[in-house]
Length: 231
Image 1 (spheres, rainbow, N blue to C red):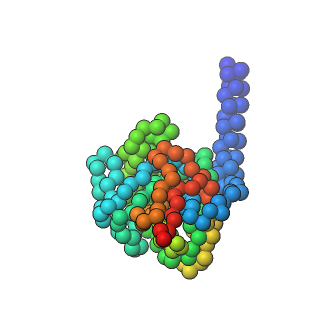
Image 2 (spheres, rainbow, N blue to C red):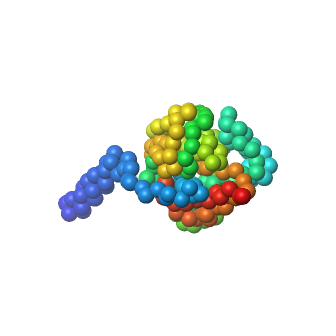
Image 3 (spheres, rainbow, N blue to C red):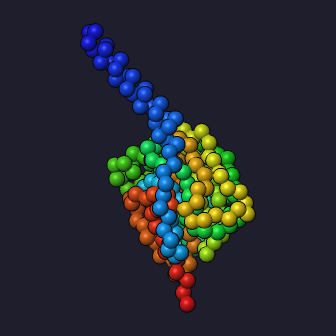
């Protein structure tokens, strides 16, 4: 019995130390990233798994939740105007991943909108991503209700970066302000303790996607699209 209690105490101590290290040190790491010099490349705004790529052809976005629910593009973008047709790319950020978000393109921060919400857990999305169960966003009610911060960047293209909070999130941090100039791969902010980041890209002539659902991406390094102006 004493041996069992000793082993249990040891395991609890190891778990406690591991949790404290992850919670207060490892989670906040911000590793150096090598940003591509290719001007035509757009980079990922977040580390994680690509859980959906949606072609939005009208003002309605269909999410593969249990009820096949739809949401309008303008409602999803809050006060920011963004016209269809466009691509909506969702990147789920795993609890063990880097949670610093970066600019997909160089340009000016045109508009920032913060939208309060009722935060629902992303646990089912996390497990579906881990287990490879598609569609990953099935039962993802957080896409409709959770707190979010929307950053509009106007560069060679206009893109939106949408930081979406989890129920466990302490804070969405935004490190830029309107009219700031940012470089591709520059840090935009951080979502503490679990989250998702979406990016909206116009379906413009000369834009080609360079990702697929299920792919792992790194903020600032992974190229998610190329934009080569025609002519």
